[in-house]
Amino acid sequence: MFTATTQHFTARRLALTAAAATTLVLLAAGPAAAHMEVESDKAQALAEHVEISFHAEAESDTAGIAEVRVILPEGIAPGDVTYGEGPKGWKFATADDGYTVKGPALKTGVSAEYSVVVRQLPDAKQLAFKSLQTYSDGSIDRWIELDEGGEQPAPVLKLKAAAPGAKPISSPSPSETPSATPTPTPSAEPTKASASPAVETTASEDDGGMSAGALIGIGAAVVVVAGAAAYLVRRRGATQQ
Image 1 (cartoon, rainbow, N blue to C red):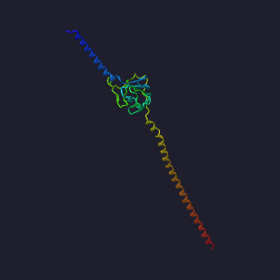
Image 2: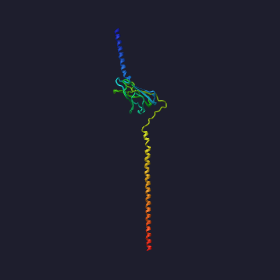
Image 3: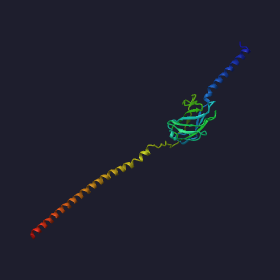
Image 4: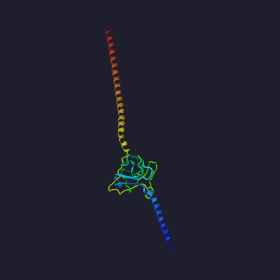
């Protein structure tokens, strides 16, 4: 048989158990409450010139955020991303797989908010932007997990289906312009230069041959005339004697 004292003890024990369970739930949910968010007003596949905003929540109680490093999802090239707005003094720089925004450390507890502009979003349902959030003391929050239920999930931008008629725009290839420009000029000039000497050489040789023949003929004629003159002189002398 339960007495009033027993019932009071049982009720108190249940209350303490519930309070302890609630505390554990709150403690477990604490780290997951801080995260990085991403949003855009033009979150649509194949949309062009899209501004994407990021909110990196501050978690540290002793240091401020000094840098955010983002690994771009497939379909977005670093060269197609430009800086929008960000904390005062922060700079934007691209890398092989993404970009970095960094600058003077923000005050402790202040979240980092910035935006970038993407030339065109890929034809996808969602985009995950893996991010590394670095503080002034060197500690890093790694928002890179693709599982939304993870402790440090990567910020994900969900996209609407592409608009009818929307098509991917191709990025210009840097190698096309240089290779097309120099090709005609060098090929035309050597051909002309190589043909001219051959023609000039042949003409010179022909001119030289004609001049030599004329000189030989003139010399022979002079010799014949001189011989005839000498013969006539000798003959006239003999007659007079």
